[in-house]
Structures are given as structure tokens and as C-alpha cells.
Length: 462
Figure 1: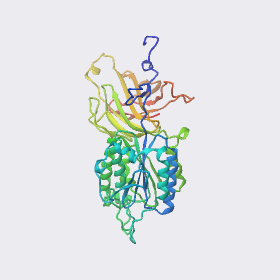
Figure 2: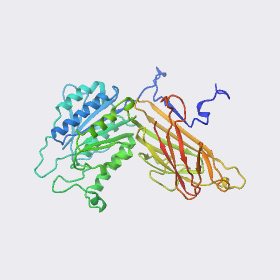
Figure 3: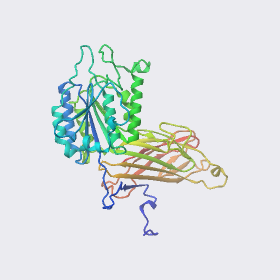
Figure 4: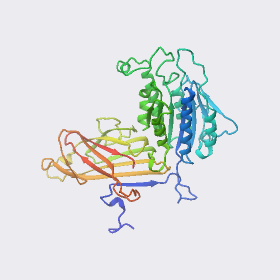
């Protein structure tokens, strides 16, 4: 019972951050047990490589599958001249659906796949590990003949579209990652960055500056559409590229950034940089990156503050309100953003605009309090739905009387016409006990501009 001597943690001013564990779709027969969502991983493997490189990539995949949680769902797409979607649920023989590499595919898979496709293409790691390892052992380099003086036909864009379409048809709104292992430039279908003729070099930075890259704009448009599809579904695109030549990261950048994905570039799939980085993504325990899924950030603030936008791995959801500024910086025109992928180091820079009201300008009136509230919901690595609420509040200080304030115990100054910054960092107990409801975050600096804007750098995940 709530009383003056028994208050919930939310009412104590020192607890600026409170984290809740939400129950998603509880079981009516057993409401005390919170169901956990299954993390989903689809591996997209390039087969247009020499046998040695392909062997390194397959070995890394086998190791990753062994590190996945037993309940995690796994799918597999291989590609070369054509894209192949492997049906892991058909154990009697290797069953593959082939997609032409020259075609672009709309949202979702063709032939009207429904939710029943989950058990056909996506299986728990514990159930499909043997099947997938056997499939990888039999997988060979792309057998399509390559003419002399030409590059191999590689349909990277189609393969990623198939993986995204699989998610959209089977698991929309569920946390999932596309793990793409690419060994060269896309030369076939949507997303092409260079022709097949070796006499034509891959575009350089100078070509991009001079607008002399003939495939660039079309490829960026394709990946922009893929990014919108992934964001709407809440899914992440990770890229692991190993090649001596360029693979098209400049074109794929928009899809990776908006979904909060990872990018690792190495000279070879056998290089220690790739091996260590790829293993780290799937490791558990102290070495875990704490990769979370399907996040959403909402900002509430006092009426004198308007949100201009965010710079960081997120996408605006175009949710407008009275706290939305007319000036847009980064991802703006909203108070809610989608973060498909986030981890312990994810940081967003938020821009605010200060606008005084008639009430606050009346002489003799008490300056109202300002407050900022950040609501971050996401699916953690264990499949739990978490909601983290960070709320801070202080009173405005009249700059004509005092130019110095203390914000959360840290001295800061008003500086007219300056752009200023506030950093929100982790502040966990030294013993590592995150179960205690303590202030996970502290504002290390908070400099407010009287006439322009201020920014907040917000670490969204513990």
C-alpha cells in the first residue's frame, strides 16, 4: 500500500531511471509465466568466392550457430548468380527455392507465404544445427560460368530482399537480424554497383564527388526502399564484407544505419579481424555485446521545449505533436523514433529548441519547471520486452539574475547563442547489480542556450 513511508521507486527524485519488464501476450492459462520472444537470425552467404574463402565463411557460420541460444530461430539464404532460400524444415533432402538474380521482388515473398512458413524456413538453433551444418558442408562456390574478362554475377540486392521478405511474411514486428556475409561487388539485379566487365573499374570517391558513378543513385534508391521495409518490420541488417575490392558499403549505408546494424570490413574471411568480430556478435556472458531488437524511443518534454530531431541509428515515425519543432535536424518531425537494433553503446544526439511562452514571460511569475522524459522500449537478448523510463526535471533560472545553475549536482552555465550538449552515460553500481533500482544515468553536463538550441546525447540501452 502506498503511503508517506512506503513510496514506489518512481516517486523518489534520486531514481531518475526506472526499468520495467513487460509481459507480451500473456498466456491466459498461466499468467504468472512471462512468455519470451525468440530472437531470429537469417544468414545470407555469398558463394561467388574461391573455395578457400568460402570455407572460412562456412566455418565462421558453424561456430556462430553453435553459440546461438537454443530457442533462437535460424534461417539461411545463399546467393551467387541467383538467390536460394533453403527450407530447413524439410529434412528428407535439400530443398531450395531459387529466385532469379536479375529481378527485383516486392515486399514479402511471392506465392503468398503465410505464418505457417516459419516452421519451414526458420527453425530453433537446437533443431536445425545438424541440418544446417550438413548443408554448409555440401555447399560449393557458385557454379555459374564466368566469361573471361568479366566479373562473377553476384545478386546481393536480391538475396537481401528475399531475407527481408521472409521476415515480412513470417515474423513482422519480431526482433530479427539479417547477417550478410559478402565477398565482392554486386553485379546483378537491384543494388548493382559495377558492370560485369573487368575493364570498367569500381566507382571511386572522386567518381561519387563528380556524380560520375552510373549505378550509384539507382543502388541507393533500392537500399533506401529496403531500409524502409526493414524499419517497418523492426529488423536489422548487419554486413560482414571480406574482399580486396569494394563491395558497395556506400550504397548499403542507408539500410545499415537506419536499422542500427553492424559493419565489419576485412581483407579475408580468414582474417583475425573478421573471425573475432563475427564471434563477438554471438557470444554470451561478459563478452556479450548485449544486442537488443525492435526498439522504440519516445520523448516527452515540457511545453517550452520542442524537439528538432535526432542524429543516430534510428528512423522517424512521423508522430507529430505540440512538442515538435518546425526546424528539422537529422530525423525530425516527430517525438517517436524506431530503433531496429541497439546495444550498450548505442548513442543518440537529440536536438531541442527553446521557445518561451506568454505565461513564462509575465514579470513576477515563477519560472516553471522544465522536464525531459525518455521512454525506450526494446526486446532484450533473452527475448524479454523491456521499458526504460528516464525522467529529469529542474527549474528554469532567470539568466538576468544568475547565469549559473546546478543540474543534477553538476555546475553548468547559460551561454546565449551557443549550441550546447548534454551527455547521458551509464552509472551502474560498482558491484554490477543492475537489479537495484538506482540511477542508471547521470547528466555529465547540461549547457542550455537561452536563444537557440541545446542537445542531449542519450545512451539508450544498459
